[in-house]
Image (cartoon, rainbow, N blue to C red):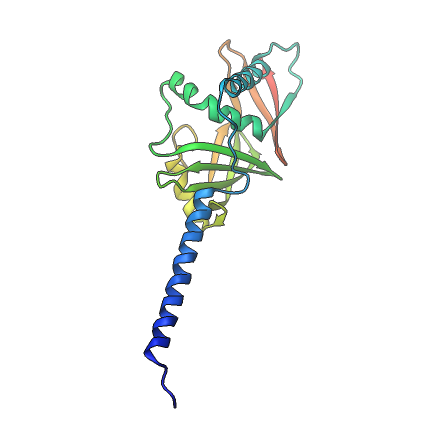
Length: 217
C-alpha cells in the first residue's frame, strides 16, 4: 500500500488549520458586528433633540390628567426607543443617581418582533450579547420570560443568557429570581403627584411596542 507522503500530510494539516482560523475569524466578525437589526442613529444636535422630544412625549402621556379611570394607551416604535437609549439613557441614569450601567456594558439597543423583545448590549469584550424576552401579564407583575440568547447573530445556549441577566443589571427591584430565566416589573407605578398607573396590557408586534394603562386616583 502506498504511504501518504509527508508533504501531503503537511498540506492537509495546513488546510485544516486555515479553515479553523477562518471559521474563528468569521465567528468573531459576526459577533462583533451584531445582529442585522443592530443600527445606531446619527450623532448631532438634531438627534439629541429628537431623543429629548421622545422623552417628553412619553412623560406627557404617562402623567396626563385624565377625567376617568378608563383604559388608555399608546404605541412606540423600536427606532424611537433606540434614539432615546443613545441620547438620553446616560443623562437619565446620572440624574437618578442610584442607577448606573454595569461596568463595561455599553450601547444597549432593542428590537420589537412578533411577541418578542430583543435587547442587545455591547459586552466588555466588544461582543454584542442579545437576549430574547417574551412579555406577559401575571397577577401583580409584567413578566419577561427569557426565551433565547445569541452573540451577534449566532445562537448560544439559553443558560448563557440567564447568566447575562445579573451582568446587565436587569431584575425586579434588584432582587433576581434564583432561576434567572425571567424578569418582572410591578404593574403598579407610582406617579410624583400621588396618582398611580396600572399596566393593563403589553403587546409586541413587528417594530412596535403597545402599552395600555389605567390612571388611578
